[in-house]
Image (tube, rainbow, N blue to C red):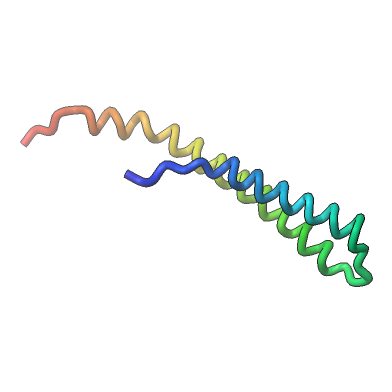
Length: 78
């Protein structure tokens, strides 16, 4: 049985931290080079992709779980 974790809140917190970092870079640092801005944007984009991926994975696991539980609960015959 795989370890049950709560991935969605973790990804949301990480994405929110990238949003905060973007705000700090834009409002406080104001870099002459645009690389820090794009790094933050990439972090936000990857966080959103990860959120979509995890939600799809969890919904697929929920759909297949009842079928697996039914077959495991049936007695095995030799």
